[in-house]
Amino acid sequence: MLKFTEEYLRNHNLWFSSDMHYDHKNIIRYSNRPYTNLKHMQEGMIQNWNLRVQPNDTAFIVGDFSFAKDEMDIFVILNRLNGNIILIKGNHDHQHTINAFKKSIHVKGIYDLLDVKVYDPDAQGNYQHLVLCHYPMLLWNKSHFGSWNIFGHSHGNLIDESGAARLDVGVDTNHMMPYSYEDIKKILSNKDIPALDHHVKGGR
Image (cartoon, rainbow, N blue to C red; front, top):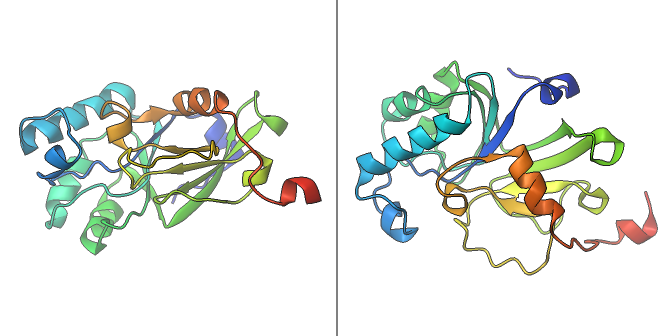
């Protein structure tokens, strides 16, 4: 099992994505995806992933990887994807999906929610704290100290007027491609992020 040490996250390229919905034909219509059929979508998303994620990179999938009923169908697609993959489970990641992930040598961890620190010399203390969960949060660990909530689930449909330091990394929000850490950093650095709870005034 991969251990999220500071050394590891300092030395690896990081990617984030969610809500691929492999083997879900109707998602093409529901989310207005630029594909003509299921095979077109699946091959397109695999190609997009591998254009960005390299074999030694680390990629976080923040839920809802596949709608396939057959564990082997999930396993086959998973093993075509580059990178060391970590799954944060979504509401559609059922036991057969978990079983497929457990069998893949690409997969380095499976979590319900994950807190990680990424080395970033531009961040306070040289580390950026991330909280990864399939669902968007109103408040999360260290949200009052500049941490980011990385989520999926909403397929780009969440109207977020709060300005909070959170981002939907679903494929439908990024031209069917994963986000790099630098992509997320650029987006959130340009937001006017307010204080979210009492901890800012009250201190630690």
